[in-house]
Image (cartoon, rainbow over the protein chains, first blue to last red):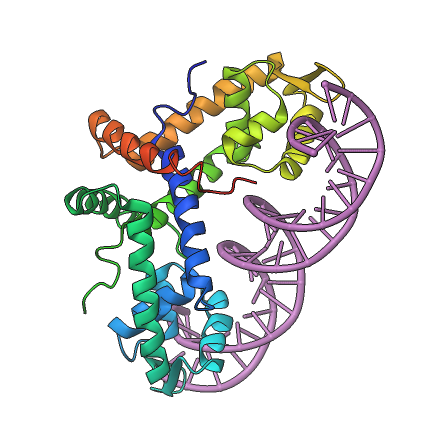
Length: 145
Length: 145
DNA sequence: TATTGTTATACTCTATAACTATA
DNA sequence: TATAGTTATAGAGTATAACAATA
């Protein structure tokens, strides 16, 4: 029988994405981190003093769902908060947070090698360029909130 | 600031997959179908007489979650069931199911054009080949149940 | 002993709505 | 009037466990 998904890019995109996410989630669980929490550490590290709304905007996570995640990272002492004005709060990694970020980064890179190791660096970069051009374009059309 | 996700294929894979799935879900909602239900119609159409366990195995959906979905499609008169032996049930599309499958297929193709339209057919096929080689390989290592 | 199909149930992720405090 | 942050809650999607019937 003919494969009904043969020409459907979206189908294959999703199947691989699900497998990759499951692998990443399992790997990060050893650090007691979820994928989104690790991403938050990466974004805050790259943008010290960023607000949590902005982190959510970058990652595509809604304000309402950011609150409990930030609370969790605060409770664990991985990030610190400092008021900028009456409503903005600047987020930064603590020492433990920076240490955790480094471990998470290593974890993610091992994961990438495990899942995408059969592709050369050049092939991966080419894929990244194509994927990024497709998902970072629809910002205007998509309703990110 | 440097983009912390710049070299991470998995990140871009997921971001695009989420956007694509949201677009597909919205499009299929006009037919009152979820993406997985549409996929089921495609698989049953391509494999008349297939069992629901086998459909689940192909799509990566667990037995326990297949039951209510099959029940829904039966209730709507889109698929029919015939006992093969005491435990296997052969699934087939009804007339209405075949009509719905055709509509869903058109819907999916329009969706693919909308999301991936900036890629040539050749680029898409190349992407599909790479993605398929990555996700259809780990069958052995992954625990699909 | 392994498999099909079913039910019940829990957990995660995400979405909406409403609220406050502030710009 | 718009935005930041919070809380509560509802809805998908997916996970496990247990069961009966059958191979």
